Image 1: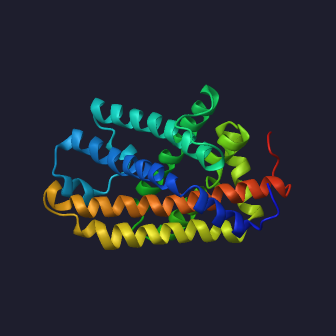
Image 2 (image 1 turned 135 degrees about the horizontal axis):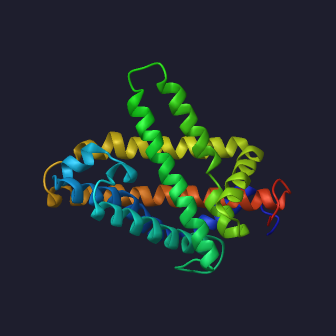
Length: 247
């Protein structure tokens, strides 16, 4: 691309693409809201109770309505996520480049959220046993392998399986920044959501509205910065020859 260092590229891209933080905000709202809506369709509980339950999307598939929400969410997220990544590396887009890219992104979304579900189930089942750390470590390794997969699909035009393999190679070739982003982003989101904001989400929707807005705006900003770092690392891996551009 140019003679800038990776850090300079990341900084320049954040400045040039800062308007896309609103795109990341929309994706964050969808990610947060879909499990809540699906859970509400199952049990019609209060919003505060649903948030406190903390169920992942795949844990809420107990009714046709919830299944419909999950399918719609996966399709819409794949569509918007493709456009968002295309916008990070080029001009503004709201959609995938073609049907193949969309199908690949849908497949990756299913794998990703399926693993979230397995991870949550495993951690809850082993919470009071000596296997918890093993399950947690296994889940982090899987998330590490998925770190660059969606960028590989959009930038390199790969299928989900090849994209995951490419993501793993990229993460290994840029190990310090990959581990730093994975742990740093998860730690910041954990502090922001689970410790600072989510315990205060009580009462009616009107009572929680301001906190919910702060939560999702902050989450969108964190994810935007994280995505810029990751896509620039992936491009750097291509340029350095650590991974090929295409297959």
